[in-house]
Length: 83
Image 1 (cartoon, one colour):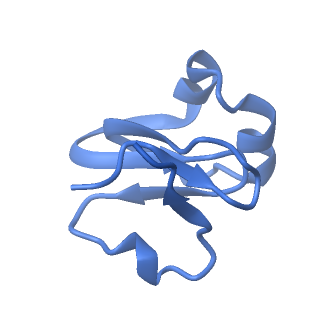
Image 2 (cartoon, helix red, strand yellow):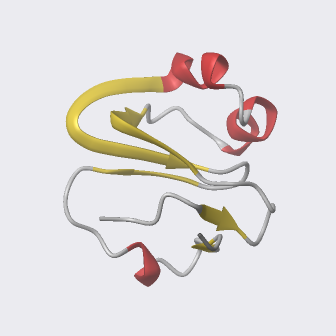
Image 3 (cartoon, one colour):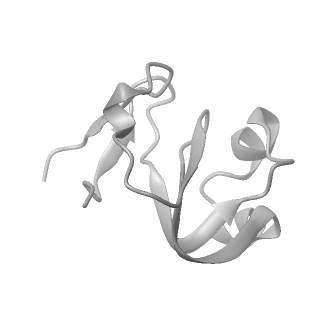
């Protein structure tokens, strides 16, 4: 289970999450910088995968398909945005 109010302290964007999707391997920084938070544009690089979850802000992204502690990833600057 994860916080659904994550916020990135690097780009100050809310972290979007998409259930049952992963990001295409061709995703890069400019794709998210130019398309966040427009879901219709983001869908171009989303791949359907049951049980997975795709996360993204304007500067970072992750696809998760197994239990993962995102706090151990030093390059992610995502924190709870307070409920």
